[in-house]
Image 1 (spheres, rainbow, N blue to C red):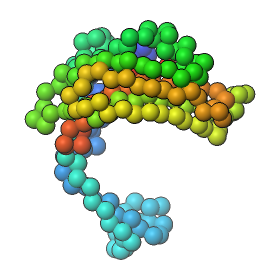
Image 2: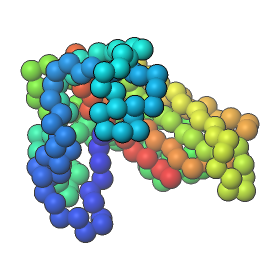
Image 3: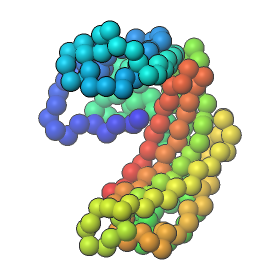
Image 4: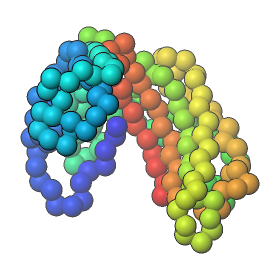
Length: 196
């Protein structure tokens, strides 16, 4: 995910932040999850000696790409994430989004600059909007609309036809356009432009 630079005064360097993320000893490998039908969770090691009702395993093929590898700094123009641009200005897109009108977005983007043993290919491009049915600030129930396009794994341009807001969308709270890259190790690189 393309995270914006921190504005909260946090000066922890990127390597330290990523090390903190991995501090619970997350490693690539097989993880086993056991599900119990009792209240053993209420005490430490309460499951010992009990038989699970289900056991699931999942394979973590690789760790996430580190902040250092993606060169995440206070300057997002220097990172290795895809960069999205549009023939329409951001202000024009925001105006259409806020009005709830249909529009066609001609997008272009750069491919991610991260080099790995398993190459990243474009998976999809998406326009997404969500909001509330209410027009008076009530948060639920929620409504969402999205459209995905699949221009090809090596594409660097695409056109999204975004429909008008659903009739029951009373108040929009968030919109985004994203490009999503994946590889065969279940890893993902995603960049987005959001409006809220």
